[in-house]
Length: 158
Image (cartoon, rainbow, N blue to C red):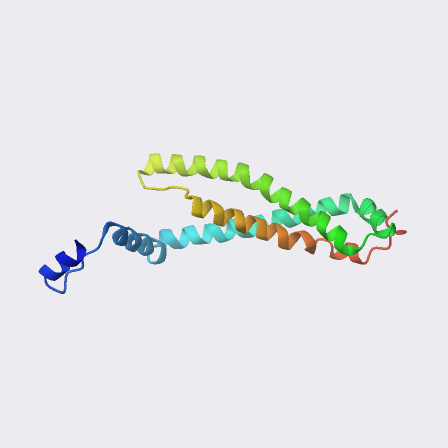
């Protein structure tokens, strides 16, 4: 239908399908208007705050259990084993943080959509993207907190 309309009207008129129009509007609001920039800035700030919180939680946990990690190290467990333990903990932290976070985000999106009458929605694609990013952040920062443990003498931990 779009091709037939384009063929019957002057060339200076743009004919878009519904999806093309929606994509164009989203791109306009995200790239051109201050709203898009503010939203992107908020998302980046949320990511930075999340990075700091994940690092602090994992670091505090390793510090609280430093004697246990040192004992495992003294028993002959390699650093890779300890890294895997902390990596598992960070994945658990990611899953446990993601589920309530997405529930709160869904509630906020629903309320905002009802209040503003804007078509806000959480899509499966965005949910999976946020979950992948959450897992990635936790997987990167988990082993980073073990840097101090690599050089800890088990005898000094007690």
